[in-house]
Image (cartoon, rainbow, N blue to C red; front, top):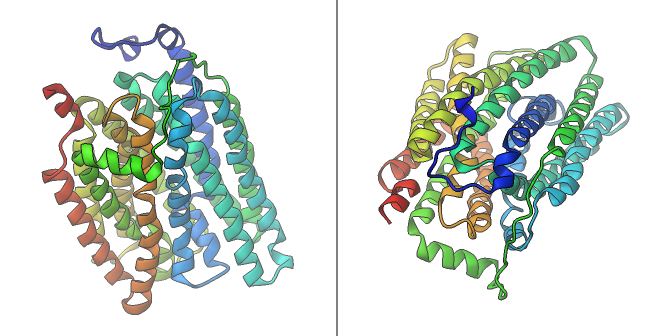
Length: 427
């Protein structure tokens, strides 16, 4: 454990960051733990699609839940990049936006309790509006929060931080999934969802308290006097760093392939005629697989780089999506979902770290913002394409298309993207 917190001699670290590293590490670890516990009660790939399926049978609208989460998380980030460049501390803005990020859980609980007195279409619109507020609130807080993590967690320990915090967070999420299963089975609809979202709100409020315990040094950051504008900045960055542009293409295809995950739980429940309480079992399988994944991928990312992690994850996605075509049992369903969740965990941890390694520290907000905002729309398109395929030809055809798209993503990352760590070493 002692070596866990040691820094390599070659790494230059701000003295205040080094002094407060353990405090910040555990503050962010506990923030993540309670956040994932709370968010397990509104999981976008399991709980929320099934909840929405009680209000509509449209696969496109159901698929909008994971799509909205992704687009809400990714889209706003680039627009914060220029603003963050000239801010000497990230923590104050993270605290303000963190409050906004947590209130929608309370709104979801209120919306669920109101369903019995509402017309079904009105209830559907209300829940979609609240969920849209939730995900865009997260997107507003995302870039400042990632910049805070990048500031207080040195690059040599980011993989360890993400791996450890996500493992602890997902273990907490497993507890949440167990509680969710009990609530869904024992409490009448829609009060079961109302109580779940309320517990989620309490948990993410506790996570905010730990987030606020970060100690961030004041670092002088100069913003360029002339702002070329967002699109000019994008064009300039892509013209000088074509390797980064190819990486973004890989992410676009990977996110398009996410249509397979977006519909998996609803497909399983409908295809095998399972009760809605089984959505908690899917959540548990997802978290258990992600726990294993985060431990493996975080370690591999620190040692061999996140390019290798993405290669493996794209490959596992291909295997999982191909296997869905031959599932004949509920146990097979859970195993395949575990494979896809294992791959998803590596894609997530790579998404948090890989873009930080392109460019210089000064350009980091722009690179992070571009990696999110430019690829986010693919998440929105994916369920629309997937839902349309389902309506025309069925679920199996959609999974087949997702597998082919995932194969293209694998070929791009494997043969056309260079590891930025190795590029910098050569320079």
